[in-house]
Amino acid sequence: MANYTAADIKKLRELTAAGMLDCKKALDEADGDIAAAQEILRVKGLKGVTKREGRSASNGLVTAVAGDGVGTLLELNCETDFVAKGDRFIALAARVLDHAVAIGATDAASLLASELDGQPVQVVLDEANATIGEKIEVRRVARVTGDTVVSYLHKTSPDLPPQIGVLVATSGGDDTLARDVAMHVAAFSPTALTRADIPAETVENERRIAEATAREEGKPEAALPRIIEGRVTGYFKENVLLDQAFAKDQKQSVAQVAAAAGAEITGFARFRVGH
Image 1 (spheres, one colour):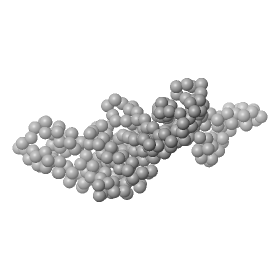
Image 2 (cartoon, one colour; image 1 turned 90 degrees about the vertical axis):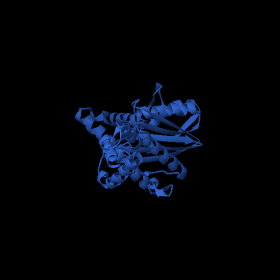
Image 3 (cartoon, helix red, strand yellow; image 1 turned 180 degrees about the vertical axis):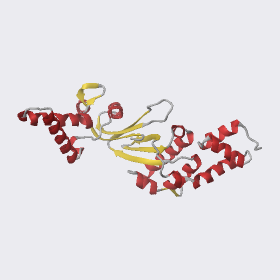
Image 4 (spheres, one colour; image 1 turned 30 degrees about the vertical axis):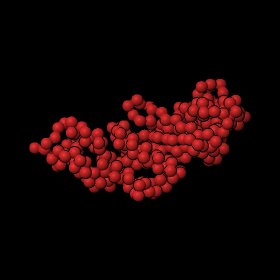
């Protein structure tokens, strides 16, 4: 019988984030040698990387860094909450984020193709995949620049790493305003900065829906243009950051609050894990 204890299984699981049964089997094979068991899990995991490619990685975390007018936001995904809150996964996210910042990555494809410590980032992720035993992938990367850029990370559960991440770029004003706007973005999830950033086809589709709905409701023909414009404006107020009612003062729009503070919001990015 292999010479190991329940504490050894726990330690190996903490070191690798592998499943309890997999840890036990590896320790059996390694005759209780934790270092050898880690290698066994890594080897067995590499053999299973291809099998895991089709799995859904809808858990994970978002992480960000901002300063000197530049911010980088990263979403790293895995399969389970257990792995997402593990030290190894969190450390991997920090390592990949640091690299993304260093190369000025603006999207996941270029980040994955770049080299980290002599290996493509994708290979680094595959090795982590092998050790941990779950599919791990970089889903998104965003880079925001401006006079001032702040980041905000929000935990939706105290037991998990941040699930929502935001970058906000401003010109003028101060960091307090920028952070307030970042918290607003986290809560109200705008999809565009200005009305002009909404694709024209999306706006036209909203107009068609507004008209069809108004006709279905039996609204007078003469009132249709006003009703349609009102509903399209409502769409903008729901989705455009500058048009949204500010979280801390619903009587003012985000644009009005920024202007009163002598600031202009010039850009933002928002990620929520799995969305």
